[in-house]
Length: 117
Image 1: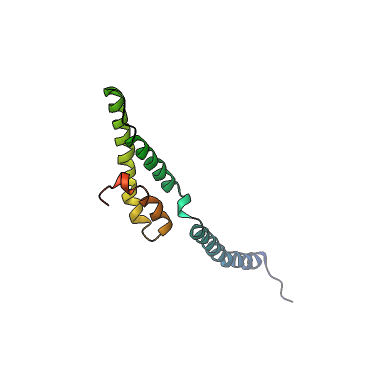
Image 2: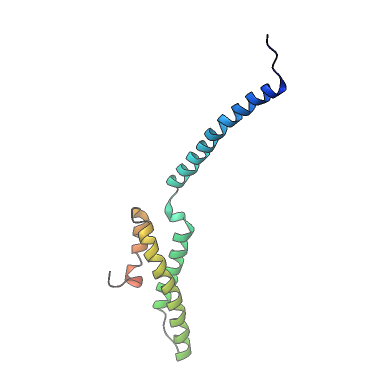
């Protein structure tokens, strides 16, 4: 029976560990990708933020009333939220063009954000 030295023994363990590392990285990557695929894009922060801005825009667009100063404030706020939602809409329509569920939600605001559509 051949005795192995510490360095030979340690070298074998390192080789075993090194061969497991790529496999562990690959497994982690697969888990990460599959969780992204299975989760709904409607739950992403960018979609939630768009939805909030679009709702506020829609609300403020119908709320322009009151005195001159109040109207100016309402118009300013509507322009702020509508402008943001319009920019988000354009980016999200492109990014999620193959996700019918997301496109459907975005299109609900077409009348407010893109009346010519």
